[in-house]
Length: 338
Image (cartoon, rainbow, N blue to C red; front, side, top):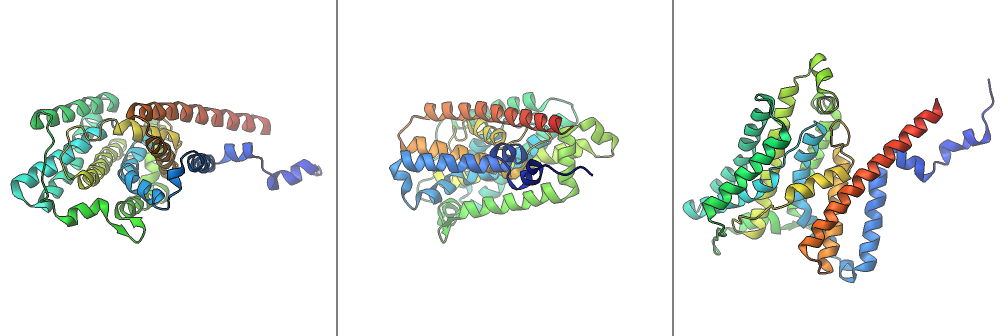
């Protein structure tokens, strides 16, 4: 037997940063999050206040909820560009119905049901009529936003001071220092993390996103998996929209504008491959936190919304480059071992 060299003996114990970069997507994202956090604390004095992290978690709760459905749908190889318009639809329908009925929980129920209803429509178009998800959801985005504009005449649906405190508390309350909407978001993330990593359905999501033809041959009901994912994506978007409604206490026709770009960017930054089959929920959540922290810093510095959009676009380009660099490194390491 050939004796191991000193380098071979010690390499498992002395893994370089490049090796960690190649081995773990989450490691890279955690390091990036820490770097961004340190830069923000140094560059933005107001970010050092104790309440800022909890305020940030509250603000990001809708994003953390929406990323659950969007991430799993993208892993399954599909897109939904209508989730931003869904936010506006939920706020307008919920507050409009409340003005008519003065029953907030009936209004909340109807608003939430919009999610699975629209997700089912999209899922039917994609799985049964064989339409592409990109164009289907792009069309649905315009349909929903246009319907909101027409029904509101681009006017905010006001409710005065009649909205019950119990509904407002969905967004504004806390359990100890932790915001209530953050607890809801973490619960959903934990549930679907277990589903995506420990169940047959979770394995089917990756199989369908990686190779739908092979999945069909192996007996996986590809259309059923994709249909469920579209319903899940729209449902988590509706829940996010309900939190936004509790936050602003009005029905705002322009709510959620650009939301889909932010969520998809966070998913890509978190390691989810645009073609499907790769990535994970933990990485996507880290992507939300990195992007959210960066935008929070820009807001504290007084940057305009257009500057925040620029930063989001740059993060997407950076994420694509980062994952490409990691794949090349992994390929080189695999080639060297042969």
